[in-house]
Image (cartoon, rainbow over all chains, first blue to last red; front, side, top):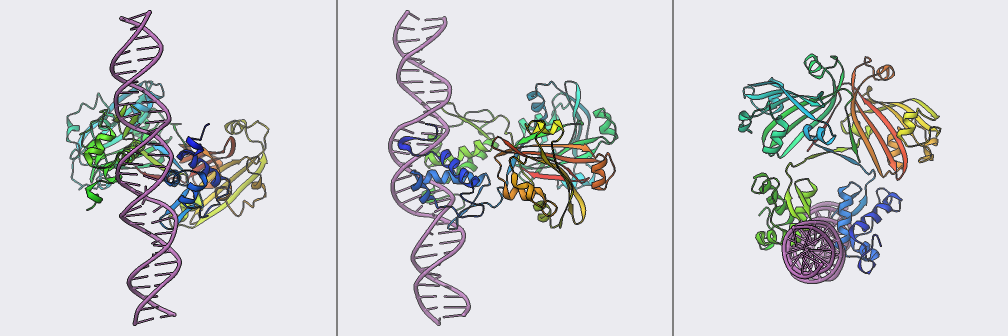
Length: 236
Length: 236
DNA sequence: AGGTTTATTATGTGCACTCATATTATCGCA
DNA sequence: TGCGATAATATGAGTGCACATAATAAACCT
């Protein structure tokens, strides 16, 4: 018996599936108020706790809107979401079965342009570690990255041999962060990027900008340009 | 008392916060086995159920790896994720405070190119509704979309006046779907897209391709090209 | 009628108990 | 020593109960 348990009662996943079925079948149409937990529990022959967990899960998935005393209603538009794992290039390449190469192109310690300092919410004269690097997959250019690191938040980074290990891998292993922002876009390759990526200037490149924070302190800002033709696939 | 309850016991969110603190402080270092639920409950003075919920939440967020009998260990790399809401252009534009305009550029009912039929897992001769449309924000081009709809999955779409309401809005309101795929990328504007978007051919455009399914049946495949300079921001 | 207080209601959360299930470790035997 | 059966263990899950909390509806008093 797939979805049944002792005495024919349903488990929380079975309750969730049944509720989702009713939503999709429009038995519970968009915007409608659904029966309360106690009634559903009685109808389905399980405990209220079980119904609670099922409905809480559906609310988290964006199908239901729940409020105390107000009851539970079906969202008018399901509002689906896709999950984007924050990529670690090295792992991404190796997961594809490719060999990961890495070349540090430049390394400087100095305040960045005003726009960068502002993006990090730092005074214009705060020195930052500026890295430019190239990730390779099977010896072909894969990602060109331009990174700024705040040494105040990560003093140890200054002693790391970044020609041997890429900053992303090192940071992921050694520096926790609390939250971040991510911006996706498309841009034309500039001269420097085109040279590094071995493509023509002006080629359309997929771009990802990432800014991470450790509490109130900015950790690192990185802009990555992906090789021409790169596609990022997600499921939802 | 912010995080306390009756008798000084912690609630599940407080337990989660404490566990997260220990992970970030490296009191529980990456890869380490943490105390079992019963011990933690005893230490924190709450029920095992409460600890269970807290740790389950952290596992869902990617901080912990749990397995029966194996115990709970801290993930070596936290593996963070960003949530990408599947956009509905009209709502996105209006949420920005802009006015949403829409123009249907073409509408045909015929089988598509082999690549499209294959992407939808349909025989090469299945007729599809092919739409090209332009979304405007404050009367300026915003998104150019090229859409294929499977009339077998959505017969009613053939009777809808798609010059008045955009297909996305109509589909979201009238057709449930079970899952989908999404591909992000960057591409150069071709002649037709450039003309519609009022930019030069070859301009780098952010691209989103979306394919939705209703159980085993493909519903719609849409390729959207966003206006030059478009940036998609997310938090994590 | 108007506004404030009070009761009602549905969900949110916690606890103690019970059993299920997936592993892992251990024991016993050849 | 090697291998299969068995016991031990940590998490997964369900139930019944109690109480907390937020939002609403009803009662109440000017």
